[in-house]
Length: 103
Image (cartoon, rainbow, N blue to C red; front, side, top):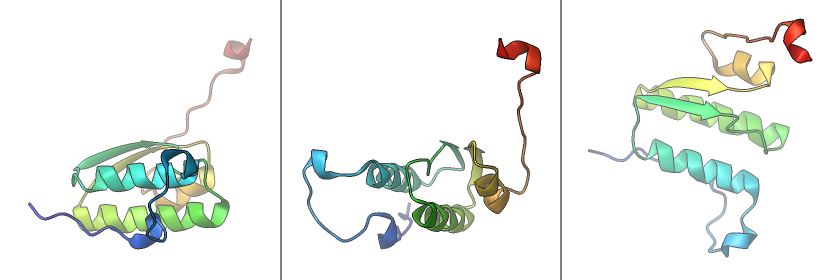
């Protein structure tokens, strides 16, 4: 089984930080890389870019879409950001709670 190449931009410049020196955004990108190395057929991602700035968020979503296409992997993306869902999804399911349940 071949290991899929991982875009270096996801992790950043090579360095060996201590665990407390890794940002939450870097941790999210590292988690995505670790999962993609397994070459899944289905990836369920719950807010995978929620702690990233808007530019890095879009770059990460674009790279994720490219890697998933290369792997032939399906994605179930859970997000509160309709723009991100619209940019990557072929189908979007929106869930809204009825007003009476908001008590």
